Length: 80
Image 1: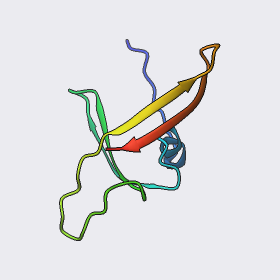
Image 2 (image 1 turned 90 degrees about the vertical axis):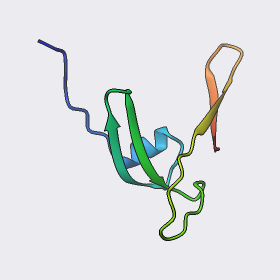
Image 3 (image 1 turned 60 degrees about the vertical axis):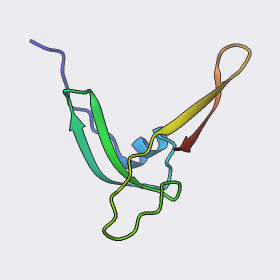
Image 4 (image 1 turned 135 degrees about the vertical axis):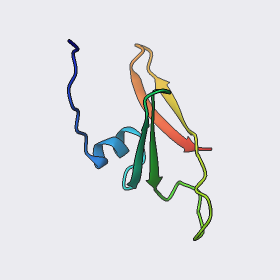
């Protein structure tokens, strides 16, 4: 027996969590052997890709700012 369930999440919520508001998820891949969920995201902050060009892998970098009490004040993202 296992504690297991199906979680459904909207595209908008997932993009908000990743700080890619207003974007679109074009495809999703899951690689359980590596514990990875791979998303193809279309967003103005992503690299521009021409027709027939390979879509590059990007690594979003998230930086959190903390208040004096340790509470997260803000999160910023940049794509490298």
